[in-house]
View 1 (cartoon, rainbow over the protein chains, first blue to last red):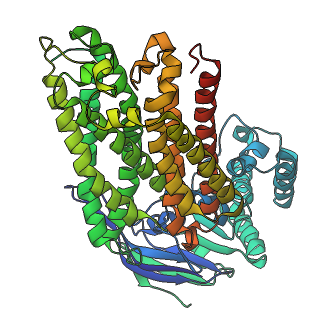
View 2 (cartoon, rainbow over the protein chains, first blue to last red):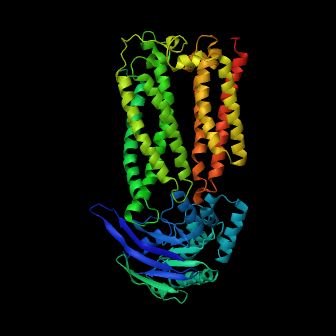
View 3 (cartoon, chains in turn red, yellow):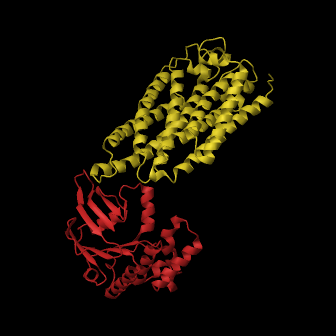
Length: 227
Length: 330
């Protein structure tokens, strides 16, 4: 269970261009389910995901991850949680050009310092699971859109996180690839992962794998969906 | 006023450190007043972000505070040729009434800055800012001392008058005058030797016990402080004469000079690091039961204890070597 309590995020606080991205947001997200945040651009979906994934700190409010409160954690503890609890899939994939698919996938695990042999084996297993084993040695700039996205998914999963966070994952994908992405998410849901997706793609929030759709607008929840 | 690089560096650093300490103290007061880790208020979250910044900045400031002690004694030593009658740093410090109070204050702030760094390091190991209040209370206690030190240092350097005929260590560190140094020098040598080696053996034994069992931490820290004082007194009383190879020369500052291979810096560094680490280990004793520190604190205390033991052992080793192999035989 992830619980957002009175969450508020203000950018440029105290300046003329102050912008309140999230207003006093309360939300409970069940574990082992697929939750989709939807709403128009500027509704605060990505901000919520970045706060929840410990990539930014709220201006006020707390986030409970299970029994543990995570917004007050000093940076070194936050980094640890970010590395081991969350797997991120970004809209732009953010793969590093010039290195191979396998190296991209292994990258988030390097700071944890585990033996390279075990890590490599796990990364190859993930690539195999996502039908990318044959591309392991290929540079990422040679990949198609679907392959790049699956590489990004493998990278998000390399530390075996309990929570997968995906920000507009189908924004650059055609219908076939979007369906493929949802099929992959179904498998991970089946494995007990908690999946959080920010998307305004109807194909995502209308998908049968989604347990709950939370609708947002102007930094507020307008429909918390069925819990 | 002398425009020497050391003086300018000390002026600038004390100005910067004082500014940082003032700012941090103000924020520390807010933290002490409003800190509530269970609250998700905007004030609390702002304080959480702020303490991260402040402790990082202060960490650097206090590391420089540690270095500035040695820079000060080096600068005081290099100034002595400018004053008639001065042979070492004692002469420079005696030029006006601020020199000796300043060095005393610098020793105190050195130890407090070191202890603050130990508390800050420990606090950063806990996920819930376990020592935040202790850290800022200590800072608030230190702030007046740091600011006073900056003022006295300014008065000392601005009041350096090359026309002054000063008196040096030969007249100050002798049994024929009045004051604490004279009383130390007047003490019978066997008594001081027994005190020094007894204190060292006792402290090292307690350190060993604490390192192995985790008990007697307070006793060890108290012994470390006592041994630090006894060691300084012993250096003045009987150790120094073996370095100078002169039975009547007891100065604790001439040892900082090139003629003695700058060995004084090494000896004082060992004593101060040993004292700091040992006292730091004791200072952390009350926090051993804090849940977020339970796993890391004993290991940190062991590291500090080991550092203290090694530093004191090296100090004793160097002093004893000199006593045995010096050309001075008594």
